[in-house]
Image 1 (cartoon, rainbow, N blue to C red):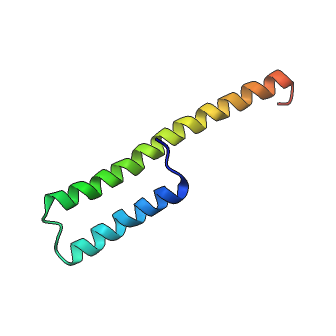
Image 2 (spheres, rainbow, N blue to C red):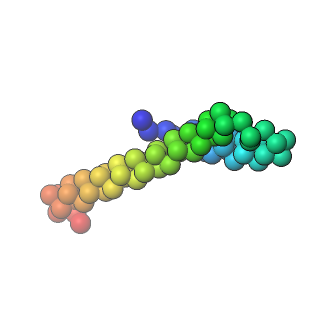
Length: 72
């Protein structure tokens, strides 16, 4: 499950504006709404951690390929 940059940005905007607007109109007392917003936030954080892990693997692979080709 890897989200694109645009999808992550859109979810971050929804969470930010959701907390702001729903807090202003005093709807954050509903636990379901807070749970949905926190779930979306956790989704973005999980995506960030998984894509960082994949980026490190790609970087290691590139280094190994460059050392095999002699182009360090």
